[in-house]
Image (cartoon, rainbow, N blue to C red):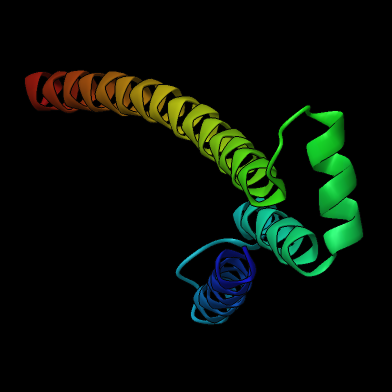
Length: 120
């Protein structure tokens, strides 16, 4: 059990460091890094606080505290991925609308250019 908890602690530290370096180098925006940092801190806290982990396992009616930790971690990361999927979907819709607006503007610009050439 302790080996798994130590591994998850190390994983949480690696995730925190990766997110902080990515924010520093502008590979990820701050507002998106908050959910990753929150999930990593929750994983770190649960892997280092055995009393909380035991109570969580009892509340979830799971016999093994490490299994409860993995279940909670999986749920946290699924929530982060769902949030990012929603953001990507919104960005795709905004991108489509922007492309349509540019196409309309190009059409109007071409029409105006043709009218100017016809009057010349």
